[in-house]
Length: 183
Image (tube, rainbow, N blue to C red; front, side):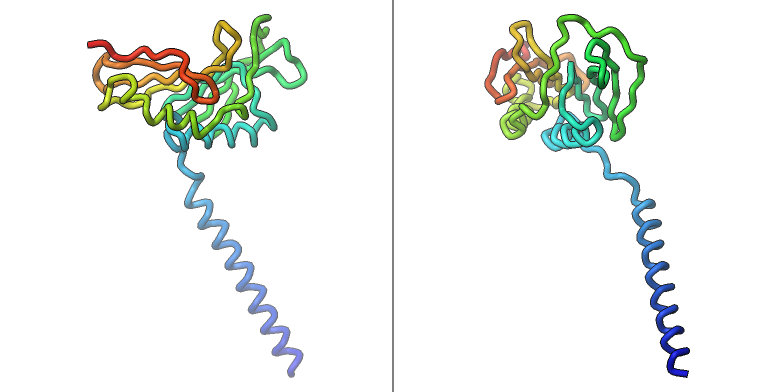
């Protein structure tokens, strides 16, 4: 009789554990993926770099453009540095092209070299620096300039107007050029 009670108790505990685990899985699935932050914000840039590293195993990219809700970039094909693929990111990475011949002058840069604190300060200060205080950052581009420097370009604009400007700075936040709004 005692053995029977132990079996019933053990079965009840096991059923409860399985039910709890399933409820947790269903509950997490119902919550869905974590919402994507504005990719032109410091949090969005940090999230993109983190997700990029997790997806590709490195942070090398040929060019990158971040918009509030998505990013577009090119990177060399794994194992074939003479070809590249174009991708989009909107919380998930998708290649939207077939491999193409990579330009002979293409230079990959490493997003790990971004000083995220300094770059974040530049992004947050861009509307005021560019004389569009009611403006918002509309685009952040990361590329290599004509002098071979990896640079960040931040475009800010006052919504609903053509009032905007852009600034260019190095990965460490050092300003290179400022093109403010000129009324």
